[in-house]
Length: 72
Image (tube, rainbow, N blue to C red):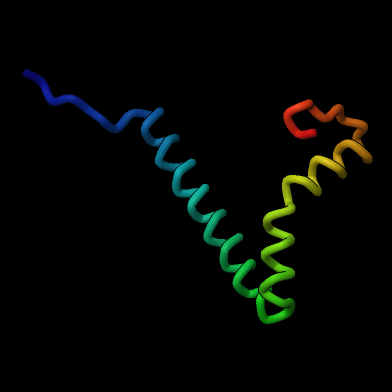
């Protein structure tokens, strides 16, 4: 029996995107923790938790995107 090569291009892409995603989240988390020295923790947490609502409202207002019933 021959050896099976598990290192394919698709596997390489999956690992690359996973590493990039983890790097991206680490940057976001570091910036969020750093923001605590400039704002109150409650204000920072409020901005993080209302982020999806703000994006939806801005896209409705600026891009004239149609909001789904699920959001409303």
